[in-house]
Amino acid sequence: MSQPAPIQVRYFFDPLCGWCYGAVPALKVLQGQPDIALSLAPVGLFADEAARPMDSGMAAYAWANDQRIQALTGQVFSPAYRDQVLGDATRLFDSGPATRALSAVQITAPGRELEALHALQHARYVDGLATSDAAVVVALLNRLGLHAAAQALQAGDSGLLAHARERMQKARSAWQQLGLQGVPALQVQAAGGSRVVTGQVLYGAPDALLSLVRGH
Image (cartoon, rainbow, N blue to C red; front, side, top):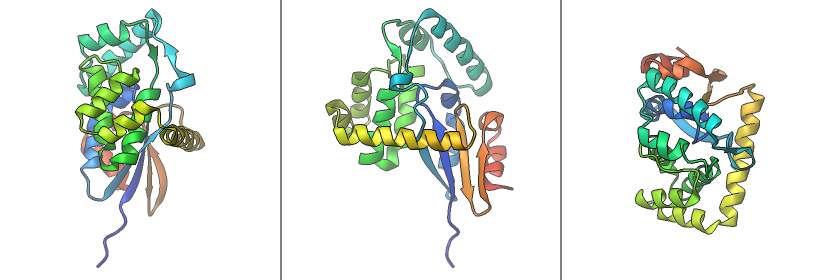
């Protein structure tokens, strides 16, 4: 007897989004389900031309949000992150390098893309590393043993750049067509049709999330 097709779940996110980092426990729950196929859809919310200066106002706004996320989810936003990332006004708030890194992993080691995303988030929010810096991201990929992805990112491989740009454009288009305005968000596609999951359910009880995704 054939197995039913897995439920397809598309995850709209940006690697520099604090609320997306807050949703890490939910993503790990979904990834562990044999009847759910999870794919990543980076919308480039803060990437490249959408990058912002890390001035004192931006830093204060981000830190206030981060404290809300930590209280709600238990995800750690460390003093090192506050001081070394938010406190560094010389860098942009730019998710382009991290987004391209994930596309490099998708190409070279697709089964490890979610792992790479979680590592990038941990490096930023816990270790206080500047994941808006391509050299920092390359070093992280190498530490994970993702050497082919690191090499492509470091070299500015034209195929990677084109793939990452097209991927962001497709994700942003789908995100907008669904009427979404923020991240994180899930699009669930199953036999019963397509539906969107956002908001508090991503930060609540795993059973409630799974029930909603499965349409129970």
